[in-house]
Length: 289
Image (cartoon, rainbow, N blue to C red; front, side, top):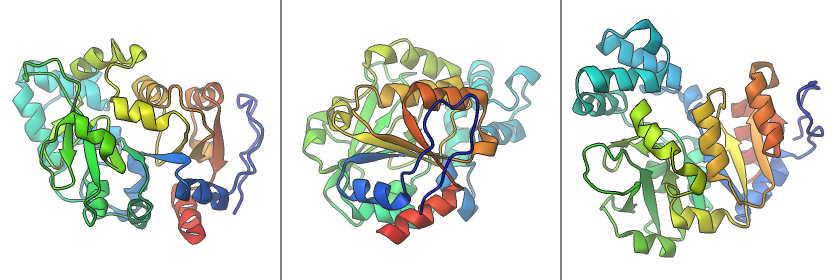
């Protein structure tokens, strides 16, 4: 199943002829790391926000936001944190993602492959639930340092959800990396502008990226699926997580919805665009399994 990216004067990459069959083969071989965005759960209509904009809208139903913060999840969370308290932000995030999200067929497919690394950038627990039938994996959350009184950037959890020593992570056959945090097994959220200011001051030198992630990306590429890169912070995270990986890299994209910044990002990072709707791409990957 092949799809060519529509011609664009801004996109300097050659038209792709990589098929979902080929990508599925590379996934099975552990050569490509899935990098999941919230777009993969949208079709299942979960009772949780599935975009940063929807999350900002949720915040707006709970707190009267100034115009400058409306529509922006990170600015909304920052306003709430500044005017109320960090605990209010944590409580609202927990409320927003309290309804469990059922794993999609893609989650279950990825869990069956025993991949060395899965990156999941949204706050739901569907990928953890898909992995729950296995004991040979662990999870890493990016965490806010607000209020913890420690100089740490992330927390480790074993397959049962117990907090683990970071030294154990290198022995986990599969690592689930949630760079922005997650609702499960313990709520951890990077969400406010202040959270990201701390991380982004050091992410260029890779301090907030766990060593096991750096090790496992080294000779692999990434598959971006269900992701959007219309915001500078989202592009920065993707660029830093894939830093020093060898490729090849792929992104499932719908050309008609791409912004100029997204096109430039794909080009600059050498990410090969696979032009098709997310759900069609998922069907192709599953058919090739």
